[in-house]
Length: 164
Image (tube, rainbow, N blue to C red):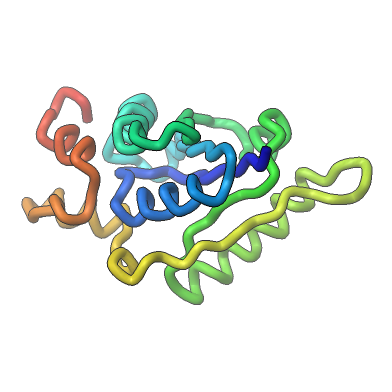
C-alpha cells in the first residue's frame, strides 16, 4: 500500500487542488489531504471549515482522507507512515520553493537507513494552471464570480457568513 500526503492551507480548496487529488487517488492506494492551520496566513476560513469543505469536495474518492494539522509536516509524515509528499507546481518559482521544502522534509524525516520522505511534483492540468487560492480569495472579496474555479462546497461556504 502506497500512502501519500498532499499538504496545504487550501484556503479555499480550488478545482486545481481537486484535480491533483483526483489524479493522485488514481495512482496511490491512500491519499491524505492534510490541511495546515497556517494562522500566520490569516485564512479566509478557519481550519475546521476548510477541513469540512475539503471533505465534501473529495467525498467521491474512497481512498482519500482529509484532516487538519498544526504540527510540523515532517512529524505528520512520520506518524502516519507516509511514503511521499504530493505538491502542485505551477511555475518555476513554485518549483524552486518546493525543491527547498522537499530537501528539508527529506532531512527531517530521515530514518535509520538515512532515507527520508520523497516529494513528487505534479504540474497542473492546463485547465487549472492559472488558478490559486489567493486569486480565488481576491476575486471573491471583490464580489467576482468564482463558480468555475472551486468545488460546490466552497461556493456554499462563501455564501454562508456564519461558516467564515
